[in-house]
Image (cartoon, rainbow, N blue to C red; front, top):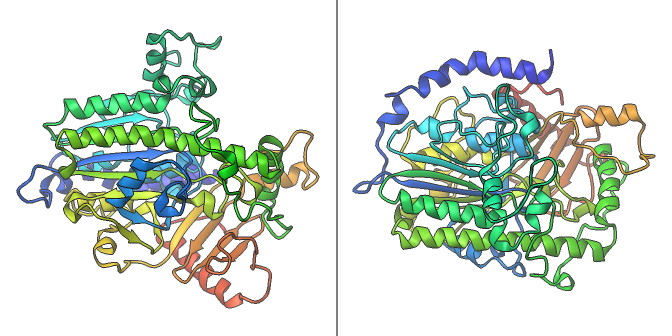
Length: 512
């Protein structure tokens, strides 16, 4: 039996019955009233992006990028300076953000694995019929364009996942965005679909961010008088890495990442080195190419920023801002030239760190920067407390509200996983001299586990590839792998013990 099958069966056996009881009408999540005395139940506006690294707004150190609305939101929010994903690729981390479960627990260990219907998302855990619940934009947890997991409104945007629909789903049905383009006079390609590249080349008023902006603002107007939970997920700044604002930023004003020239020595993971060859071939290996790519990437962030600004302005104009928790984050980061890599699927900081803002009305509209490392596994428990709900005992994460209020963390280490993910390694045209087919297949299906300690160490253990140890305080660009240096055996032993203890706690069977 495969590891994924074993994990899913284990989850269903040990947690599934508890989930059924937890989400039944009248259970504890529906019984406790929110802690907002004298007010109606708080709303939730959850905005997230795809592939947005942390340093894409001023509060994270980038004052060159044009993101005034995100900067304004950050000035009014709790800012998690060092926020980490559970796994640096779409489906696994999306499952964790939505459910509060580790990817190996839900079974969503690689892209396009369906989130089981019996695994509840936050709105199902809250289980309150007073809330009007809507999901808009990219889902990437299977059956992309079909409403599910208790969301009463579903605005779909992506048609490229139809091969992964469940049995019985109509693969000829198209997304709401598809019909939006049809209404504006566009005709799909020969396959009957609009590609992401086609959509990205439309005028800004017909691109996906504007489409979601219009739908989200309409939702807010229609449901201004009732509690709501609204998730809005933008595709940008995800590839194809171009759009209508390609000229928004001057490439000459873009700083090439300080670790752009890092050679990735042989003591770095083979999977990373092979991926780098492919990235250099596809995106360029000189500074001019990377500057141009980053400038366009920033343009996509600006495009999202404008639509986020319009949504937040609508929230304000409707008088809803004072009773709406606003979350802004992303599903993972992007290397964008760091280590001469592009995209994600590695354990480097640029791929595993994301922006995470939370504007919490009851705390007041002021900025609070949390410098302690935190994990998105804590997203659902944190929102449960902010919504006035009891903690779900089946969730491995913890609420970050005490950390926000006191500055003292409830726990001190952050963990990240990587699971066997076919397709996560790409080889340049003509092949690679770094490895033969057997070696490539082995590292393509590796498992690795990472831990970030409060004293600034990061340890990454792999079952079949090179392990890594970085001192983030002295080497924030992670250019020197200290694992085999022989100088830090005590640190390796201490953090290895931490990883293995965490694995026992969350029933993680990866042999690292």
